Image (cartoon, rainbow, N blue to C red; front, side, top):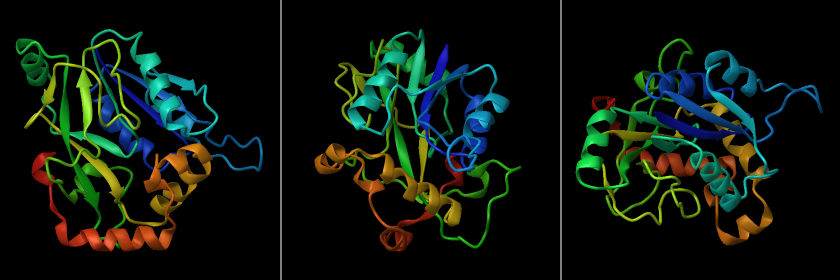
Length: 251
């Protein structure tokens, strides 16, 4: 069995694309809700939970045990679910889309080499055409496929695809204590939609996250990318445009 795990908080904009994309790749999914708005307090209704239940009714939607995005607690919660899963596992955020994956080939290579898992490479997505709004009826990766692949030494948003009982992650799940893991070169790329699509919906979802990060994590530098204001985010995106190219060949 192949399982993808994600956690979300008010992700109604990206979730339909994310769920449709990954439901075609994985047998099972565990979707951890970090208290998305349900209309009980101020009349707002994000609808993230309903989207999950409607689009992938055979997957598992659960309410997080944590009240905030405390990095280590998030990682432990992911691993608690992993421990009860047979087969192959990967933990992604709703900004991360696994593209061009040949999972049977990767699994065979991992098994033949006596490994527990492998890290998939990643690309940081940066939108050079913010005036072109993506439409809901077309896969996001087919509409917004510009970005760049960082240097191999940059850990960033690569993710571990593994068959161990748990991923034994360091904070953020970009590294692992597991022995016998390797790089999965050429077996798939994680498209991390950090600055794409670049529109008001993306800015709103990025700005909301910092309210969910506890003070201790902020002091420790965990989740620092979520603490910037909109001006800083715009400046960062502009600085990355020069590195951006069409990555549609990786889809």
